[in-house]
Length: 131
Image (cartoon, rainbow, N blue to C red; front, top):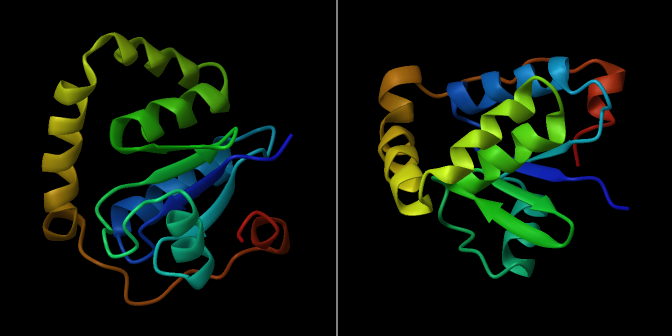
């Protein structure tokens, strides 16, 4: 079985902090990471019919399906296991409502959290999880 791939905005401070959180808390080391801005990220988006110029959503590639916006976040929490998988209770909220709030947050993420000027140096173990 292929590992899930989380495609994230590599210049967004909030997104990078979220990846750091996942690196620390994904005990099974099952999630791989890829920047939306990278050639590999763009190729993955294109292969799933997603806009390669649209950088306002996280994308989770899992079991040959692409999840975006709130579905990507909740599916990632499900993969993470307990206690993070408890967040999947929010799947009961209709997607259009979840995505409305996701879109509002995403539209303001640079204003609230700024953009990264430099990337942190990854440990060798962390480097293995980036494609």
